[in-house]
Image (cartoon, rainbow, N blue to C red; front, side, top):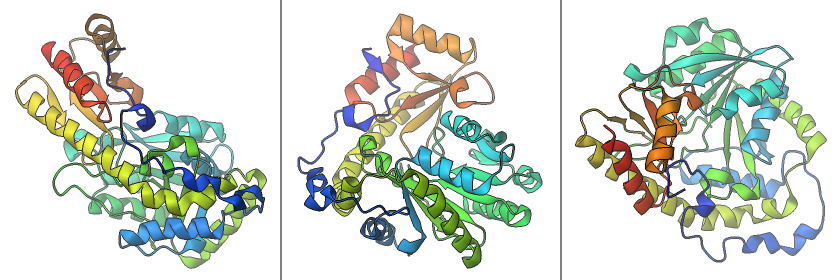
Length: 355
């Protein structure tokens, strides 16, 4: 595909990775198996130190390791829910989320993010919601919208009143876009039981190493019960391999160079997209605040699938049609800011030439 604007795999995006990035995987201690359901203490301390570098104090004893963010979701849903229970999930959002809910025998109950409110949910909807867990994605994928302070207050308030837990996917949090774009982690939240998810896949651009984490916040008694439950669940899997845990301090340290590469790429492409769309009245860019994606609003002359197919077959450009992410109407295209610049610029030019 000449102009693929859908890529989300950083390892094949033409980025520079340090030659010694994976050297820590050769630690001799990795030949000895010492299972720790919550994760090796040194690895959990490394995760806590990562948050500490951002000025957030996280107790390593409140961190649980998993093999992926998907597995982390599964652990949390098993802990919180019984079969048939409801989980609130934002829309638009990454299409994997409803599948993860369904695989646990649970019901997905969507709540809309409002375009006119900078992709924030309606607080009244949250106040009326009844569910065992409320999922928020911070920043959202694909809209790139951070949770505002008002939205966080509404989310926490809804959970505190209903007894639901707040599950916050923060895998893209370290990729703020644009001047002044930044948002704080919810890992320090103490007012309601909160599970913040992160991992190497996005933070260090290494999805193949399969390590993520859950940071648990909230009232002390609830956190203790959650840790006991997650320890039991994780003990049945013991899925996180020892070498990657031993290498984690080095990966988080040297991986900062990869993170800088990814962030520079995404910011460069976003700047180019802002300039290109500014000259096209019929196409609107909703600038993302964070993450690796951008959303284009285009004239809904055809449904999104037909438009995406036309771009693919006639222009050689691959994009995500909006319906993949459950956008509320036709006229939305999602493109990846991770794309190599030459491919990105030409692909965007071909999209805009249609309008």
